Image (cartoon, rainbow, N blue to C red; front, side, top):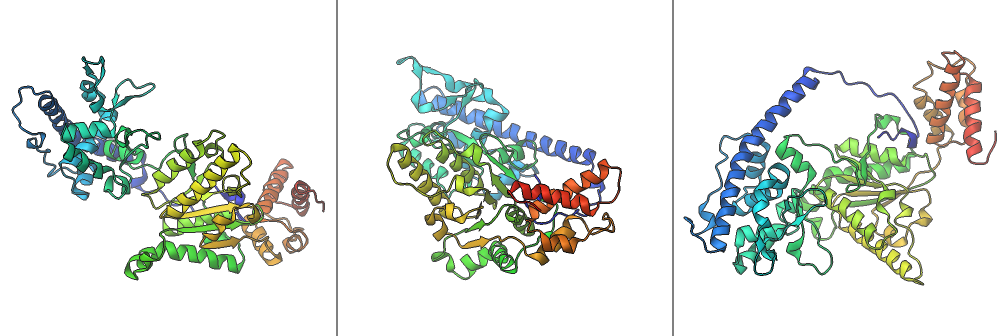
Length: 479
């Protein structure tokens, strides 16, 4: 998604020359090799899990079994395996429990029939065994594991072992901290182990196809990655705004030094929160995109239309989903038109007001606890709840450009003056008309279309003036 429409300036990016490594054939060959390597490793892991599950059933139901414990079935050696799965196991030095939980979370996606045994009914009650856990999807008819399923396979009826297994799903365990898998939060009042055991989409792709991909925009992930072809030199901002932006970049580059080496992590909260405010078209979205690009981080713009819900509790759930997925990634979360979600709390004259205020309080807490960078953008700072503003590390005011800045915007947006007729006077335009960068972009687009429709290869002054008139009329003004 391009952010050019929100920028103060637009310019053409220098194309990167393709190399042999960029060819589809090379990428396909690499993907096929990664898939084969993962398949070889997973076949061994799946066979091991199948034997463990069979042993657990025999021991649990006191049937004839050649093993006294499932731990006699050692996980297969991954020595010499170059698959993504093997690398992940080695990276986190996974033991018996971790490997079994990881493959359990993968099974519904790679070999769902392995869990069909868990559909066994308890004949005494004519219903499924509670201790097996699990759930059935709306479309997929296979057994979907929960944390209860993992506890059954690993612990059986051993209560002490069950308590030990709970640590696998702690927030600071690498499963959750690194975003590998999680237990979906069960409804209020339901046992913790009843939550679904879910592997993240990123690790699912990595451990199967061998390719790590960016998350896609969907109902379960209401955010889009924003990118731009522009560079820092294309950004036209006031000096004090640049100073605030440089502070955000410095934090991203030196956070570990500040928090760990300097020991300030005891008194400072992790993460950085900033509010961008000012008139539309002044560069808020472009600035957020360029901050991410400058430090090699992805910027995700939250789609508020899919987050905010009229149903009680749904807004918090939607936001929790975004924050949970971003928790282990070094993403920059960007909330545009944030006053729609982070507006002022109201007097509690109704149940609806109470729940709306609860939503704001919940969001404030999630933002404070998020260890990455959160940027909120709004046209009017006054619309943002003061409780948010007090907790921001910076409030950055994007003002309308002055005459000198408008001239730079005209030149950057027009990619110089090579396509301008001799009668064009950019200095006069910059002096006479107070326009934002976004408005200037719209004017240039109109002028280029107008010139080409009339068969001209150069943009004339009148083309630009007509475009300016159209932009001013949007604001109820005239030339």
